[in-house]
Amino acid sequence: MAPRPRALPGALLLHLGLRAALALHAHGDAGGPPGLEGPGDPFGPLRGALRAARASLEAQGRPVADLRAALRRAAGSAGGGPRGAAEDEGISEGGGVPEKNGRYEGASTLLQEEVEMLSDSQREMLRGIQAGSIGKNRVEIVLSHYNESVGWSKMYDAIITPYCKGYRDYHGGYPWTPRNCRQLPNVGREAHTFLHHIIENYDKLADWTVFTQAQAPTVGWSGAAGDRENGHVYPGVTFHDYVLGGGPFSGSGGDSQGARFVFNGHWKPPRQGLEFETVRMCFAGNYYVDMREQGKPKRLNTTCPRLKSKESQLWLGGLPVNQALLAYIDTLGAGSERNLFYSQGARFALSRERIRQRPRGFYEKLLGTLDSEVYPVAGIFAELLWYYIPGRPDKHRQPCVDHAQACPEGYEQLGSSSDHAEDGILQRLNTGSMAECAAACGANRLCESFEYHAHRPKLCVLQPSNNSAEGAQTGFWAGAVACRRTGARRS
Ligand SMILES: *[C@@H]1O[C@H](CO)[C@@H](O)[C@H](O)[C@H]1NC(C)=O
Ligand SMILES: *[C@@H]1O[C@H](CO)[C@@H](O)[C@H](O)[C@H]1NC(C)=O
Ligand SMILES: *[C@@H]1O[C@H](CO)[C@@H](O)[C@H](O)[C@H]1NC(C)=O
Image 1 (cartoon, helix red, strand yellow):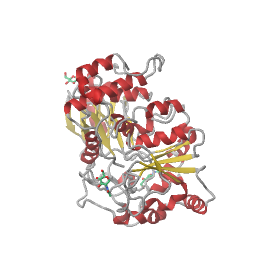
Image 2 (cartoon, protein in one colour):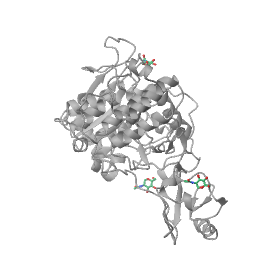
Image 3 (spheres, rainbow, N blue to C red):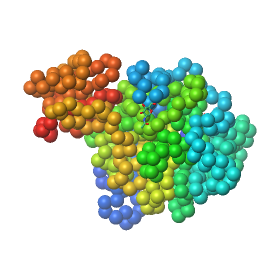
Image 4 (cartoon, rainbow, N blue to C red):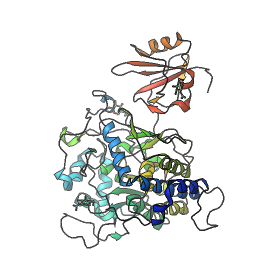
């Protein structure tokens, strides 16, 4: 959904100025009612940091909506990926922005067409939903609506709980608007809607709740300005999978974790205290392949499609915004993660158990960061971090296991697959194999680790000791593995 921008409420912020806002941040939450938070409650500093970020963006004349556009551009620019490297997911390579700015006219029949992708057990559950024997207590779809045509979702009418943020009297123009919509104030975009549902239904949640924006769940994202027709579903996945389970979510793919997400992106938080630091992001390939144009749809059999893109950098607007993002990550208890997993398009499903691993009060406080503006800064952060919002903070932090190639004898893997240290490399070589790369490192007394990329072209990078620590892996090199000499000094 894409609520219209409206005048900002926080007129106070307009005259605060960056310096004052930063001072406010440094002293924690000076603005909240006294005594509301105990010591160590991260929401106090978070609220201060969010205000400082908002004030800084104001001072720059940068609307928060730009952050979302920047995030989409980052995904769009990364979408290319090296051609021909897609065979491991069994899907032919797409890559790049599609030529036609693809409005998919068939959205209303999309889900009917995609029934052919389903397994027998998925079809059986679908029949149960349509026959009414499986109701909202088992699976409920929370649909966040602004003005989109939601004809696509008719098939699941009986289990949809729609929330509407558009004008109540907005008639005509759409094939179908949700019936029995619960009207919400137009604040906080879909993150506000989803949290609102969790809070209101905390004691009577369905076994599974599917959270979705109202955009038809078509494949891909073109990244082109103004294109709202691509619905962010990863190729080989269908919206049915989120509702019915199975498919890519079979077993440990999400069904047994109580969380159905497809992680099409990874990112690294900005570094502490660096004004111009960006969020480094890296995406899976194939995001633009439309299965309907490729004959019989192939199925994705993982929730972690392999990273294929070149690194893209998301600049959020400077130090105060970065600090607010870091405060948000801390608040979710994910401050020690170096790689974070991203699921584009704010569409996922959660089990009741998973949601209830956090107390209701946690969601209420998070809602408090979203409920006073159409485009709050925290809305972008929620979009980046949905996977980390529900669930015990100490659990399930790494939803994707490494598929990295094993390091050779005498070396051990450094960091995660696709980790890369970018500045101050010793040497870049074209080598035929990982063994040759390891030998080149062994022959260079300054080399403490190497990074090796096995796909076209085979490349090898030798790294000095200061780049051979986990903390130095600030960038992405999709498909490469970093190997450190066993027993090397850990810096
Ligand atoms: C829905 O709202 C968006 C954002 O205001 C607008 O760009 C779009 O044209 C609207 N769509 C329709 C069908 O009215
Ligand atoms: C997933 O599909 C790909 C391509 O079809 C195949 O190579 C791979 O082995 C499959 N993985 C699993 C876990 O089934
Ligand atoms: C390691 O040293 C090189 C050269 O002095 C420098 O460019 C690079 O940024 C350093 N790496 C880290 C992680 O500090």
